[in-house]
Image 1 (cartoon, rainbow, N blue to C red):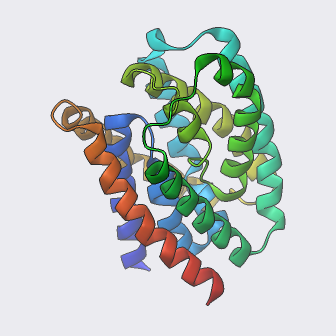
Image 2 (cartoon, rainbow, N blue to C red; image 1 turned 30 degrees about the horizontal axis):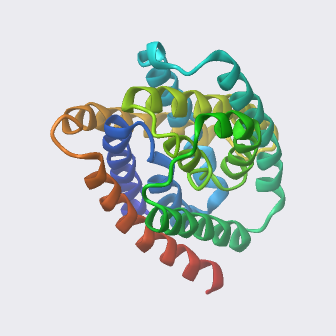
Length: 245
């Protein structure tokens, strides 16, 4: 138990470094690790406050680089609706199904990044897909705690500058968190004990973010991506094994 809590704290710190550097990636590190020890509902619940607070801070910090209001409104509306639907699915689905889903989505994300590393989503196409993309990302985030196969892939494919990417992805995750937290509470998934753990998890996360900001000045984003991809493969395989064992 203590080993699991220490590993989770280290995962949040590592996620903070990654978020400070590129603005995203925390859930794909911390949710699979928490799910291994305590199950997906626990992982999604404990990640709720760190997601809300870190994305709220980064969205405000990079607000000057936000995309046009129409794009953001459609993105957040879709994400909020999807998060509500996903939260209901989280309460209804079994543990092995949820762990298998997280493993599958994680591997799908890694496979897509390797298969299409230079794929670019044209802006006019992104404008048409923004609300469906937000909806699917919200469902995935609500049901399994990981939306990266859709959210990060969709926004990074637009090839935005680092500041605009961080601002946009932060607003997306913030919208999902604002719906997800009351939904998880009403469904009994976010309990008082888990809420306290969620608050405590903010400490290593915010501790790692300034480190990531500094490292981003000296290390290429591709280097971070390679590290995360390798880690995700290992975690996804362990999750898949746990789901079928």
